[in-house]
Length: 231
Ligand code: DX5
Ligand code: ZN
Image (cartoon, rainbow, N blue to C red; front, top):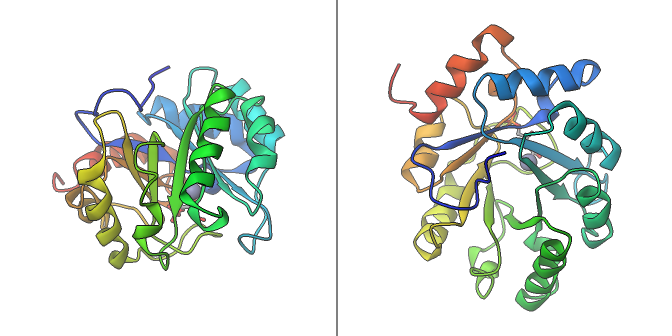
């Protein structure tokens, strides 16, 4: 398993969002995405409260872990009470667990929660929504291994990319150390990836742009996402 939170990647990392996979063939789709060159798998967890949708629970994460023993699982908690779910996801194969800055009380609270994630043997990540002021992250910029900028309002796949969020990426990037990843999530595809990469993002989440296309094309899509100017 390759841990993305060590050295800076030489090429952008591609994290297919399994929310857009065929749930009736989830293990197969996950294996095919990894075989097509994905660097990690992005697992979207929605509680029907923080976002107006439900997606999957820890057991589904465990099933993905069984199907792909060597895949790095990047679990994105879109939930109001993330602390309640750290252990269930750590026990079900998560490698990284991220939660939203919008649900914490203070920078110190975020840092404390990051420590809890580390104690469970996972890497902590923090996520920021489009309308949230990036200054909410002040004081947390050493505590996390991954900073995730949402480029759609979370809750659903297949939405249009919001370019205004790139300001957040540009603000975060110079404050990070080499082992810290800067990820973007929502509306990323061949038409938008270059904007995110230019803003300093190094890890691209893509759901419908990969799983929404025929499986035979996934390898070339992943390669082109890494370098979207090469057509
Ligand atoms: C949105 C999720 C995303 C989503 C991305 O709430 O966090 O990960 O699956 O899907 P696309 O790439 O289709 O916008
Ligand atoms: Zn996500």
